[in-house]
Length: 375
Image (cartoon, rainbow, N blue to C red; front, side, top):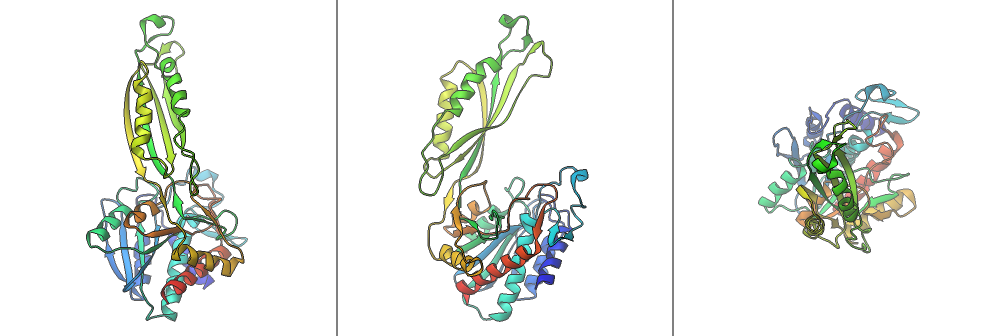
């Protein structure tokens, strides 16, 4: 099994599928799923490749993931070629090894063993795979979800293979995520010579007090599942680098990660009220990434905890921290969603890597979850 999972992971990593390109990763996965009796529905949109695979009928357990990866950064900073996977000291190196081609290999090999042992399993085992998770996510999982909902075809339980673990595979699982909304604000002034400020209108001087007021907004106090919502500056820019020019505009980008205690409309109104109550000329663009979602304790979480405890002899921590994931789209179907994946300490970094033993362990956990829910 170790050889099989390692070789599959290496095949996937060797394909430079920088988001939203797939470049053949899904063809490799589909071929293996077809060999064990899965039906395949491709839902491709623009440059994004998506597919829905299913086997059996009844209550549906879906494994969701993505074949796209983030760019490599500076090639010179890598100890090895990021798309020529190598094994050193028990670790598999390469872009996507941890996020999340290693988890995809764990899912597929787990399904192969499970189907071989339980060819007439109860319920339906399925896969939802996209190549648009790391970029805009507009043509990816959400399109498959929309397709399924149009067919009144629902997912009951979903395991998202995002790298959720901190130190040991399964020590942390995500049972929800905060929402995310971005405000791109431009404060307009009048450009001029810095020696004649009375002939210009400095947007930085007007903007700084407003920025501080926005950062001081207390949106909520959080709840049992989420930390308090937070507002942070992601980007800020003004001027052209000359010390004798008052800039004509100030751009500031806020990102708000919010709990289930507030809505995106409330966040927007709070920020707009501050902008309108100050003597500034501004324009604003909103980018909405997704609502918060939570999966409360139930059959899926109990089953995942049981499987992790079987292998680790320790229960995982339930968490909603971190960024967004495609789980937010699947949760729109009313599905129970849990993220369980590899250790995340090298994701999106140079020299991304994963322990070979962790690949094997995760695959065993996935198989045990399949067995407990479907056999």
